[in-house]
Length: 465
Image (cartoon, rainbow, N blue to C red; front, side, top):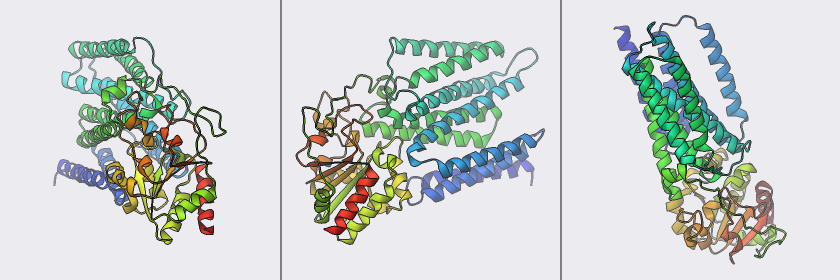
């Protein structure tokens, strides 16, 4: 059997593992095995590629594998769930940066002594460099916003759309010149610089409320850049893997946009969150609107005698690392005959699937997790809804107030429950920067405390009822 057939067969096996791995990632019950399958496919692809290509020396490659593996193991073991969105943003950025590096190296390798470069090679190389650099720069800004190294608010500046359009058109013109004439290195460097600036300017005006969508979109960009790099270096499996990531990222971005009832154009160019005013009162009573504050005993009585309880996890649950505490309380209620469910909003937290992963870490049964469309009809039949730090995704203003910045965004209909227990440290707003009307509802009891502490106190109090 010829070596080329063996190589192609191995690549085909990798592609099949990618497909089935992606399929299994669609369910929390099979996600772990899907991740393992996809990782095995990538391992096969890397090993086969190293044997297939003319490698001058394996020393640097082996060193890179060892260092990268150690870093990956450390990140997987020690990064907290609250920092997972930041890590995803970094991974997206590094993926884009890697594609740029590979394409740039190919640009220099293929450039002839006369400065010429084949048209087909130059187009794929330049596309990979352009998208990869935008992804890298944009992802670093997204990381900075999530990590609060830069403001998470939308930074809107004058003439931002014409400026971005001018940079984009200038970049296309440079690509055209390089393709049509020679592989001009100074122009190539200018292209990288313009793409870097464009990546920053595209993400800076996007507020924290839209970060889940931005992360999904940047993930798609990183895949497209990798696929273009695959064409540049003529590597089939890189083309396939990049296309899969790009397509899945676009699909996820579409799902996120539908969950927020907004278009991708509105997310990228709307400057959402830039002008929202915070009008909330404080837990201490400073403000014109009053809330009903609850003690652990008050909330425990409502929970102990309920027939159906729906937990609504949000970013506050992740911050407090309270996933095990909510599972303990849920188990206690179920032992008393209470029907327990979890309501998962697609954009709860700071990245897609944040709450699913968090609850899976605490071994919450998958059949207790319900998405927005499944659970919303259940709220009006539930005795108690327990909201743990989920702010914007439970705000009735999205449904009732036409002048609200989040109007039209599908929310969890928590206010339809017979009673609401809202666990939160204060009346501070969510990522959208607006007040939550649910705080002031007649059926709402505000339990002001850290989520983990509050849930532990509720568990103890329910045991005493």
